[in-house]
Length: 458
Ligand SMILES: Nc1ncnc2c1ncn2[C@@H]1O[C@H](COP(=O)(O)OP(=O)(O)O)[C@@H](O)[C@H]1O
Ligand SMILES: N[C@@H](CC(=O)OP(=O)(O)O)C(=O)O
Image (cartoon, rainbow, N blue to C red; front, top):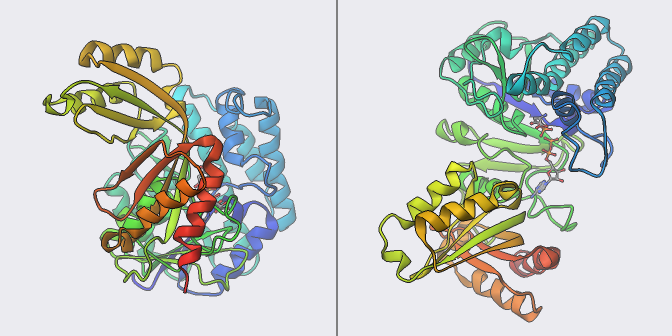
């Protein structure tokens, strides 16, 4: 079946009845929008918790919010989840007592460990999809909810970071062949293992579900609906003047997402790229806005198209004479990080030194053991750990043939007396990374936005 558009609506687009009505209008507006992937209800107010976070708090018996300023018990989270869904059902004026009863049972699962966390985390998407399908029906739309556990959205049994298994694609294709006039509502974020257990993708994983459905049915387009008018030039919470980027390549969005632009899940575009399915990031609150098209190719007219930023980073710095001539030194070093489950972001290296950039939270609890392992296996002359770093990454295909933005960035930061802690160009040459102290990161981002994007506009 061709001519299908897969639409994914994020948590902010399905947070309450008003938002869900906007979703219905968007779906009804184009008969090609036959697959609708929904997230769990997100934030209505800025300082509110997402339903998924409440569910994780229930799963971890009140530990999930421990590091945040709020202290919310598991019992309070349970009530918050029930209240939110009851409110949505009543505001949408649909019959939903059965759903609330079933939700209450699901909130007391007889499961332990990661299986318990995954099952509970998935319930936000699960119940929202069932509610939204009912609402569509009440408004006269031919619609059905299709649940991953029923149609066989098969995933691996890494319960909190599942990956899609090949047979899932055939099972999704079957959905596409039946009931072709219907709108199919699918909960995002989770799948089912061969043993019939629920496993979730990493956070933000409903984007991934949308991308996988689009790939499986070879859709014409994957629309990703959110609360901003596309992928913006930089984080709108810091750069209020940031505008939507009209076109991006898969490579550019992947770089931006991996370096902190979290409007779109890092892996959601991988299979779409394989089948050349264009992705369109759009605003549920402003469907008339042009949004951002993500395509295989584009002709760049500018140097930098967007600037990402990763906060709370740290680096481990090592010095050792002739380090670069010691075959296997970097491999051993990275293996040590791997053995502690720590993801490494960059490792700029030179003749006698190397630095490994990581998320500083990932060092919690293991930094002393990690240092000991490095000392024992690699015997560095000197080792230091630098915390509270922010890594700012300007991205753009145009950088490949134009290195002036790199010079401009360094000059502008110098003029404003912002010390550069680290600098590194990616091998693809379409982005570079500048590390600055967290304390001056907002200033640095503002300066770089001005000099690399704003001032270069015609
Ligand atoms: N460069 C950027 N472009 C767009 N949004 C961004 C960017 N950087 C950060 N964001 C934030 O990402 C949010 C959208 O992502 P998310 O909260 O996951 O949406 P959803 O609830 O639709 O899944 C926006 O509200 C915005 O604050
Ligand atoms: N609800 C899940 C999955 C997701 O994709 O949500 P959102 O679309 O709100 O980013 C999460 O919060 O991680």
